[in-house]
Length: 363
Image (cartoon, rainbow, N blue to C red; front, side, top):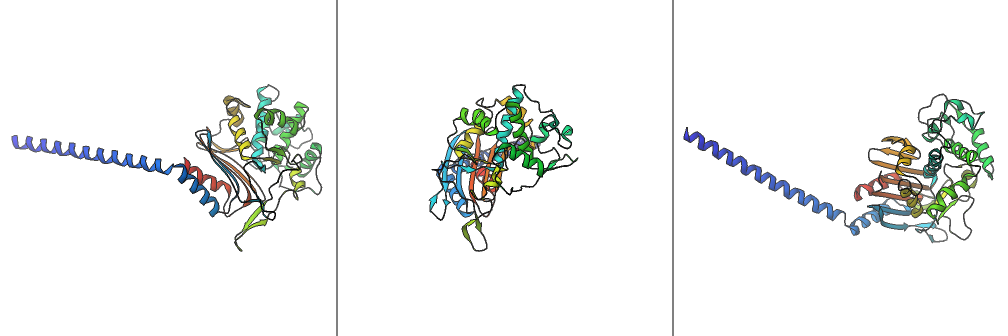
């Protein structure tokens, strides 16, 4: 009996020793992992990684990285005008394409919060002749579930007034009774028209009053307000067959002005990366929207599209593409870590994939 007890005690002692060793080894592993993580987040290594990644994929444009809600790194790459050897710069304004949709949604939410509009209101009261207008709501327009269908069509002539821009979209779009998700710029052009009908101001005037002036945006312009004394980045593409940068791309400005003139409320805005970050911050911090207003605007979506954003788990993404111009704002919902890429050359992969790779490295 005593021998059995002694054996049992030895077994218990060995088990305790094994547990202690495992705990020590696991603790060492965690410390090593933390050391590696700390080393991985070294700013010099991170920025070197970003520079090498963007060079590898033939990126031209501007990158702005946010960590802990503050600017972590900003740099311009490549040429705005390769022929004239004019380099891209952090202060330049670039077409942000569909990223503008989130700003149209902001102004809609401001009217909703003032009691001048409801997300459940139908569109027929604003566009009485619109087919199935009684069956689509403001929320449907915001979320591309209205049934409206329209390709990205360049008009034959420049559309010089907001009425011409609206009339063009209304004449070119069709309406289906299928109200599943169908992405089209037309939804946001109609929203821009509704903003003007309620306020009595043009979309551009309202944007200046509600967003640009309060946030002191210094490098933000509409397509028809670009300063004559500033370099406007041309749109390019990388030719993978001939391995050649800076090949002319479709929709390069200013040749594409008719197309830009048709994208009222949906994609005719030029911004710098810094101004774009100002807007991202102001969506929830009370400068232009409170957190409550932001949640109402996006309907606290956890997956899918809402009000200019794509949501996936803890991620919030806004992106836009127009020929050689590509923009992506990628990061967590609270803006702790955010990657802003604005490019004027379509490289060997899209800006969304590049932003994701950078985010994973930073996060």
